Length: 404
Image (cartoon, rainbow, N blue to C red; front, side, top):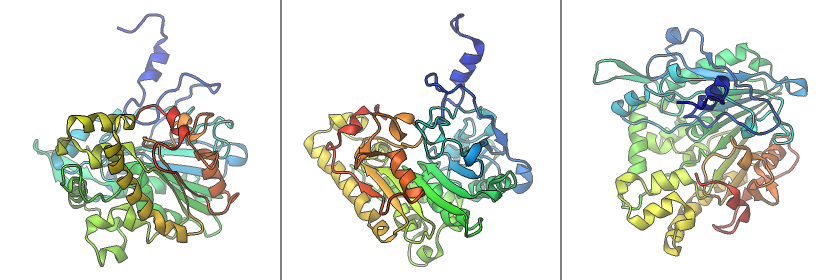
């Protein structure tokens, strides 16, 4: 039973969006003003529906002042589902049904913050947070049948197209500058759709893409020697039919699953892009290198929970993951209008939290936090904005981040 001295409205706010990265904030000067869910109009007719057939949703907060003509469009993350059974299970959560979507609190959440102190470049922009309810990075177009006979809809591509179309009607088409972003599975979606999104605007509009924690590696083997993550990705690609969003030049020479990895995707992207990622990405270490299926020994279990518990031998293995990422990103060095911020913090998704985006204790490279580097890149205040951290544990500014 709730304490009687806590107002009912505050308790409601505490419960909002409990499964998403944006959650209520109880500190800071800005008031708590949750942003309502907008459900896509005509979703069923367009076939643009969540896994359970409900219309997808998004949260739109209008900009103000000199930011009223600028737009930030963010694609939510939340992993993937690779079997009809797993995808069917997601229908009973916010990751598969808009029935569970509630208003979200933008205040205090990194790049969505309306406080100029903590988000100086984007605080007064129009901001859109597109909810993720398809399980394949807004990329699939298929359907399946659950054990109970009901239909499971894999319509991520249609959701992306329909939501962007509706946003264009709500003012996005008149934008003077746009930043297309995403985190985790949404970061991958940003990479997948970057050029398509950019092509929807006149050439004079500044459109750039920004992928946070979306650079998933094609790690050949997990700790047990199995290629478990590639196999998982392959099931997603096949089940949800994501071929339509993959680059044709890649498909002409490689397996579709290989073309679903950012390493291949970034080779063909023409739109300016910024890659933000940890070289010791906590999600990838926990789920790609050390998945539960690999049955890691006890010492590895402690290591995967907190990189500070890893011994020197284990750190060397993690350094190999870092080196793979750095090598895969070398292609960006030839793209003058691209940028990157690759730190050595044990974390995943850094744009949506004030502590990592822009605060006195945020991770820094070249004495700049993420917000500063991204802003310098977007607005052209610095040339060659490509920052790569040294190996763990060299960066003391990582220590302020809470465990993932």
